[in-house]
Length: 419
Image 1: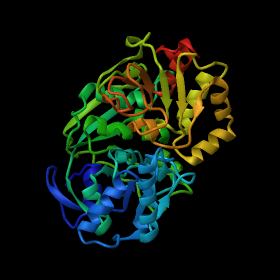
Image 2: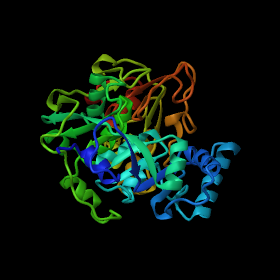
Image 3: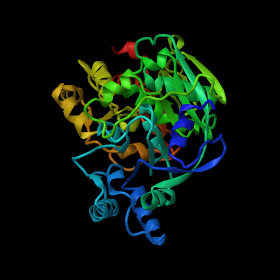
């Protein structure tokens, strides 16, 4: 029977001999992850279930990232709860100064390898599809079951094949690829399905850019965004993979629920306007919009690639007097590498703020939330009303080139106008 990559991964993690899209199956976890927001809720649910210990401490990872560093007494309590529970259970814990934003961190630390199933207490667990894994976000009650039993119920999704062709022009990045997809199919176009990215355009994306693409699959309603493992994957995993792995791909005659062709050579830098990730237009259609704050970072675009693109735009420039710029490396390792390359000095010299790795303002937590009537241009993944603070603020999504250019100009501009 011909199978998609998703079907192969799920079948290998069930006791079934076969499965079909739409069926609900019990899936075994290779890694279970939660954070300082989802974790404490899951711990309480786990206790109500009567479960005292996790199914396998070696497969459980807790990451303090959403309210790290703590903004108030309540968030400090959440962080303490996560640390205390992790110590008690003997699971891996990444605390402040030792980790970073969960999705970038788990990939960086070698927890994610092709073919695994990763259940995460965060909707952007789909990021891990960049490495050929089935990463999916679950609610805290389901995460509690995963912690206790090491398995969860999953409806077998269909797959939309996204074929990427052509060569990208300057200033077009992985961020634009996923914005183009969401702009085409809408924020619910991938519901109960997986987005699988193929073609020479997919092969040409670096791992950093694949992480950015897979990260926003959930913004199309998808279970995950998936790249079959290839040479790029293998090179990234050298010296970091925690387990042996083999490369798998969808069978040539597998059934796909749809096919979407994206010609990268025809793609321009894009921006998603308030208040939906699906409100996508070319940057040229949004130029002149005043920007009060630029935020570069988050689990989708806080990588070395994004920081280098930012430095390319800010070098020799100053952040506009009417604009704030906040730059957030996604992990401590990325922070140190950026420091060693001199990127942080470029940012500070330009007048930007460099933050410790944190989810921070992305979800309206702290370290840069927006006020009424303000506009933000950000490399994050969501721009719902109230997402980054005030419900009267506007959030625009774009790549790091576009965001950094806006920091210099004080408004949305084409990147070439600054660089």
